[in-house]
Structure formats: structure tokens, C-alpha cells
Length: 333
Ligand SMILES: [Zn+2]
Ligand SMILES: [Zn+2]
Image (cartoon, rainbow, N blue to C red):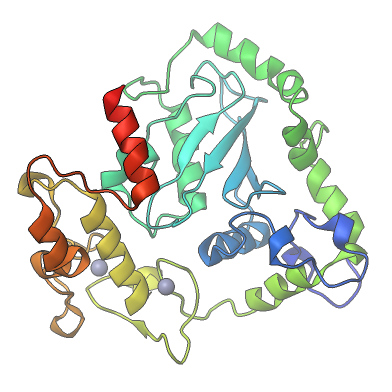
């Protein structure tokens, strides 16, 4: 049991700032890990620490909050006993775009150091849904591992004997990776990090205290995209037929997602979704009062008449002179 009056399980396992945690204010934002302002990832990490997933452990890198390391523990033959280390690389605007998934430990199931292609990885940005959580992604990855198929890029299917052997050798392999040892420990059960975190209960810094406070509101409704509650200036709305925990969304988050889809999908109508009319989750039309502007109208607003006017054969559209010169150089090559 823990002491100190704080709820036992709520402390994030990653004591990211132990070196600065000597009672001083946490260092200013310049020293904060990259991506630490991504509220969605923050919220996800809090959830994971509080409600760990069976056979899966995940922690953000200590210097880059957009890079998460995870370890899948094999619980089924032929992966039994295997520890599979991998990396999730999140884009800065996560969850508007999917993360990249990479496996580092040889498994006979995934190619190593290569992007794994799943419907929820950046290989398939078009099928991404911003309400998919890290938990869902990792559970999906794990069940894919247990499937005996090789349909996707970045995966393979070695012989059962080889996969068994790799499971046995996996921990030895992982021990050569400094980050792995740091985050998941070297113990048989990979519990090193957790124990370290429990021991270091006094080395709490303000950032973690903040994280804990926010976690106390468990049953509060949150936005399905950013996982944050409503605020006075940013209420939650239910714009479609989505039910349950996915019911609520901030208007701002919904608009951001719609914009992100419109900006990244093909300009060919055949490959466009009707995100400006239909919710991508429940597949129902947005209620009238929450209907976004039409695709055409939005595109016109972002690109503007001016830009529209200069699109002519032979003209290059570039952000500024430096970029323009670079493009010119590239073209001359
Ligand atoms: Zn939101
Ligand atoms: Zn919906």
C-alpha cells in the first residue's frame, strides 16, 4: 500500500522528471518533452496508468511525448513468454492523424524497424478514426499478431518453431536496447519501471500532481476526440447519432477533424468521404444545427479566391522565398 494520501494507482509510472523533481518548480516549457502539450496523449497516458491493459505496457519517451514505447507480452503459443518491444510515433496533431507503428524485437510475425501496416496505422490514414485510442491500437496490434495471416505490409509469418525460438530469445534481445531497459526494466516480468515508480513516490513533481488531479473526475463526460471535458467556452455537443462514451465532442474538435480529412484526402470525388455531412463513426448525418459548411465552401475559405486565381500551368505554389528556392533547386536536379 502507498502512503501520502494520494490514490494508489494514479501515479504515472514514468518518473520522467526525476532529475528536476527536487522540490523545485518543473523546468519551464523549453525543457518539457516535445509534444507534452498534446492534451489527448496526456489524457490517454493517464488512463493507461490507471487502467493498465492486460499483457501490454506503454510509456512515452522521456524526452519526446510524441514517441511511445510499448511492450507486448506474448500470452499465446507460439509467442508465449515473448516480450515484443515497439514504438508508436504520433504526429503533432494527433489524434487528427494516426500514429506510425514500428516493431523492434524480432518475433517472426513483424518485420523489424519497418512500418507496420494496419487499418489504424499511418499506412491507412484514410481509414483512421480520431476516437481510436492508444489502447485500441495496441490491442488491435496484439490480436493481429495472433492471427495466422500475412496480408499486410510490415508483417510476416515465420515457422512456428522459429517464432517460438524468437519468443525465448526476445528478452535477451531487448536488454540491448537502453530505452527498453529504462522503461520496462530488465526483470523477468518487465516490472522494473513500475516498481521504480512506486519506490519513487516522494519524487513527485507538480506536473504529475496535476495529472492526478485531472484524473479524479472519472465519470465526467469527455470529448471523443481530445478526451477532455467541457469548459465554459468549449461545451460538449452531440452532433450525430453516436451513443455511449463516444457521444460527446467539442465543436472545435469536430471541425478540426473535418478540416483535417478534407485537407488530406484526394481531390478526386471518388475517393472523398462525406465528412462534411456524415459522421465517420455512426455513419449518420450530422444534426442540422451541427452541420458543418459544405466541402466546397470550406475549401474556398481555406484557399481563398486569391490563391484560386493564381493557379495556372507553370506556377509553383510555395510558402515563401526560401522554400521556393529549394523547390527550384530540386527541380533543376
Ligand atoms: Zn475535444
Ligand atoms: Zn456519430
